[in-house]
Length: 269
Image (tube, rainbow, N blue to C red; front, side, top):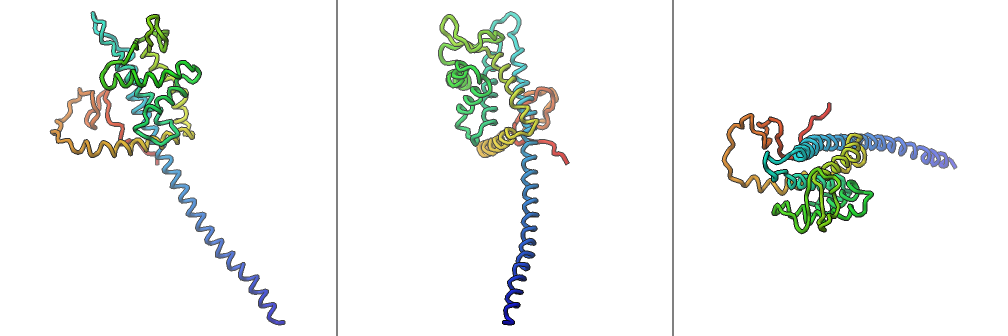
């Protein structure tokens, strides 16, 4: 009969010892979890900072600044050719595909550019116009491909500038007309009203864009590194300050453009 208290004591003390050890282990796990949360938060903040640097330099600084220059360009005095309509629409098409890749919910795939172009065209450029929505896929094939590969448009397609009423309409002759300036305006409007606010707010879309950008950087690095490193080119001389075509670190004059990757940004302490 005297054994019963011992049994009761054992049964009551054992959970106590387990509880103390369990709380210690739980506390350690909580601390480790907090460290992981902080680490993930730091990674996320770094990715958002890189995205912000990319859109500031490459989207706003290169893409849209170049579009503004091309929009304002006119032929030399006494000439009718040279209004850079083709380069303008090519640049706008590239911008549509770039932003389409960045906002996509699908992982970056360099072979799916047409899909990302069409998605952005439909969802962000002309979301409320079924006829113009359907034009994106066709224009990608006949205008983007033709101009990028041979500097010609395929078929009965007319590219005009600064004639907004002639944008994405069919002319009396049966041609399809695209106003390159209006396309650039529509692209900038979509960016300013739908994309840029999301980046500034650090929204879920910004997180998606940061992930796509990281995937894009990795894919392009894997493709370009062995190709560029194998070129046996002579060393460049010291760049004069008047050069504006390329950014190589030495060239800092206005108008310079250069590599998108690796992305550099100033981290906050």
